[in-house]
Length: 165
Image 1 (tube, rainbow, N blue to C red):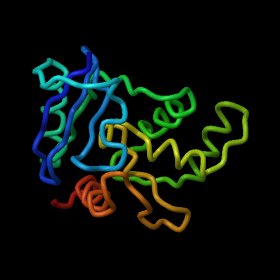
Image 2 (spheres, rainbow, N blue to C red; image 1 turned 180 degrees about the horizontal axis):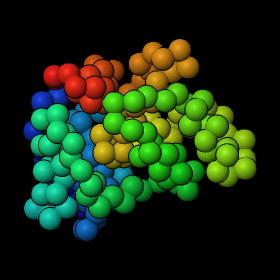
Image 3 (cartoon, rainbow, N blue to C red; image 1 turned 135 degrees about the vertical axis):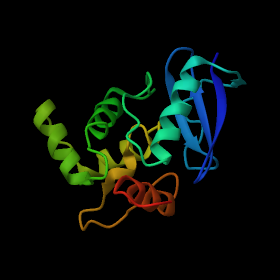
Image 4 (cartoon, helix red, strand yellow; image 1 turned 90 degrees about the horizontal axis):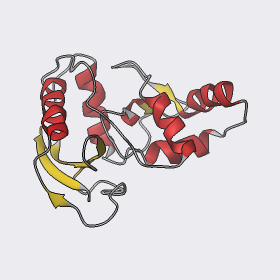
């Protein structure tokens, strides 16, 4: 059974989800694909991974380097998990394009991948912030869609570059 807990961030309420030992979801309230990783009805519980995640988020939102990620276990297709692994490699405060991600994925798999397919996987990232899909921008550098909202995307990038929310 999946469990949830809530975290109040400077950008709004966040739902944390876990199947037990690892985080499977982190969504801003009412964001697109909210709760997509849940296997059904979830119970509100306190789990150690939620405490670890809350500490990580506290440091992140205070502008400090939060250090090592809590255990993550995003649920998705093999293709989505490959894309999400690439997202985790984007350095804090930096951005890449969907095309850049598609090219890196093609280098690793030897298969052609379209930026549009990568964009679909990025948009379905179930663990916002920790798997930093907000660091992906359009080909022209513009802040394209973000399931949590473009204003939150802008705020997260500003925070990572030393600014304030």
